[in-house]
Each structure stands twice: as structure tokens, then as C-alpha cells.
Image (cartoon, rainbow, N blue to C red):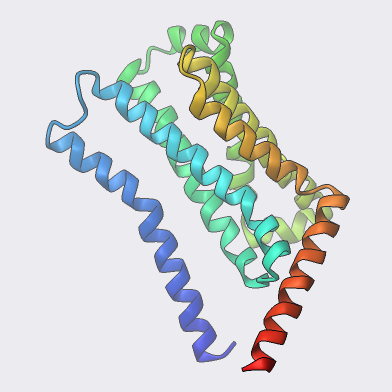
Amino acid sequence: MSSSARRTRAAIKAVIWVSALTPATVLIWRATHGGLGANPIEEVLHQTGWWGLVLLTTTLAVTPVRRLTGWQAIIRYRRLIGLFAFFYVTLHLSTYLVLDQWFAWAYILEDIAERPFITAGFAAWLVLLALAVTSTRGSIRRLGRRWQRLHRLIYLAAGLGTLHFFWKVKADTREPLVFAALISVLLLARLPAARSLMARLRGRTAARVGREVAER
């Protein structure tokens, strides 16, 4: 890898780190300055869950973007974005366990078993935990082709997370429905017909750019 490529890769990683940590930083600043409103725990739960879903959806978008643009190097950053998604979802769960319930395990287990939106959210976290634990290079080598099949469960995690959001808000379902639509589109993008369409669009774009460069 050339020094220029290394600098570019480092710069992109730095942008991802700063972008992904900014919501958490803002949340901490708001918490220390009394800016979380009348129900601060509820606000922390909402913000961490919302950003977890945003980053999950961004992770799912990496492969379609690669196929549509031909930017192969973007795949290198998918794992980092996915780990940040797990980070926010874990913050979301930790807020519920520690700040909301204060480790009342009997009540927590009853909640998980009897309240569907908590069941869905906890199941999504378990799936993401399995993906985070197996995101290392060693796991990729050990699991081989099974690793790819396992990590397709990210769609299941995103679906469960969206369902958790949908059931939680009850009345104003616009945001969870937007997430559901985006995830559905990204799932459809995996179909052979969609992949073929993206390849044709990429080819046409490359040909048009080539003609424009030649005409200058």
C-alpha cells in the first residue's frame, strides 16, 4: 500500500471515528448541562437507540454503495461502522439495565419475557453481540464461508431493532417506518436483479465520465 493510500485510509477512519462519537459526546454535554429535558433517562434511551439504528442502516448500505459506485475500498470500513452500531445499541441496553431498572433482574427478565418491544430489542442486541464477537480476523479465518452466512444476520438485527422502535413509540410511527423502508430497500439490493441493475448503472456512469473526459 502506497503512503498516499495509507493517508487516505487513515483520514477516512478518522472521519468515521469523529462522526460516530459525536452523538455520544453531544449526549454527555447535554447530560452535564441539564439539557436532557424532563425525562433524561427516556431521552438517553431514545438517542442511543436511534443512533444505533442509523449506524446499523449505514453498515447495511456499504455493499450496495460499493456495487453502485465501484469503490471497492469502502468495504474496509464496514466492520468499524458496525462496531459503532453495536456500541450505541449496548449503551441503549445499559441505560435500561442500569439507569432505568437499576439491576432489578427479576423485573428485567419479566420485561423481556412479557413486553414484546423489549423482547425484540434484547434479541437484536444478542444478534449484534454474536456479530461483534466474531468480527475479528481470527474469526473470519476460523469460520470461513460460515462467517459470511453468520454476518448476514445483521439484517435480522436491524429488523428486530426497527420492530423494537415501532412497538415502543406506539403513536408516531413515522421514524421507525422510515428505517423499515430503508432496510427493506437495502435488503432488496442483495437480489440478483438489483445487483445486475447496479452493475449496468455503474457501467453507464463510467462510460459517460470517460466521454466527458475525452471531450475536454
